Length: 372
Image (cartoon, rainbow, N blue to C red; front, side):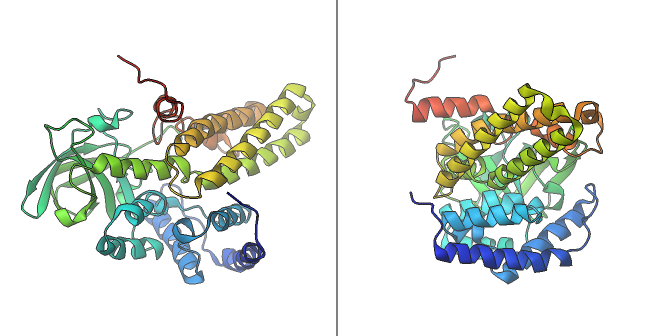
């Protein structure tokens, strides 16, 4: 795959850089981290600006190199991240684009791109995390509707979401991977209760969601009934392979900032720290090259390779940040301290590292499945 930049792509970079220089100063102040309605408005306002400027669909319809240029330039310029639009833009949207009907794509994709709808992810359950296929949320079919009961946990942005990409069990008798369906559930449907959860870093972007006889139209099912596990693998391939692309750019920026800070406070004199930062530089350069490969299409199992290594490298980066900060690493007001706390979740989110290791072993290396 040739990822060299063409003159047209470099022209795209120049135009994007010029637009960012004009657009970013017009943004309103960022809301408080605890103000989720305010954060939704801020994030969706930014998405609308991207839409009006012609950049909203870069995650879906642009070439691999254009996507990388967009992520590089927006991160370097300090532009807002996708924020509350994360699930819609990077998970549900790409899944619907790949697996949805023409009617479903026309219904759900334009509002995501215009910054008009927020999606949350209803996958994990209290007893179905790493073993996601053991989920128990039931959906019985009554005519043209599913009646859904159960609960979900770690549901991203549920308190401000309009829609939920929801996994349900539609056939309790089928083998666990074969009785699952992927539904788009409106979050204003009767019977839904949302209870926010506090993370270690004090944020509450996750929630528990309780479902009591919630009615979801059959027309909201993406893919065939009981074929939801295959559709879910499409979703997870995007989550593991491309949803963290912007964060790789951010980590490379943080690495440079760490080196600058270490030179200022004298810790650069430690040869062990210099070697550590140098190795991390090589790690993130390699991850960026893997990113370039992954964005060429649906990432597939390559996404697990990326997710596995990126999760560990991110934790190592912020451990190095703690070493550079010294006692300052205990100050929650300092740069990188909250990021270090949040990095602890990355070996769990989007499938634990143990799950990713199994996927790599079985589907890439061809090793036999382990037996309990």
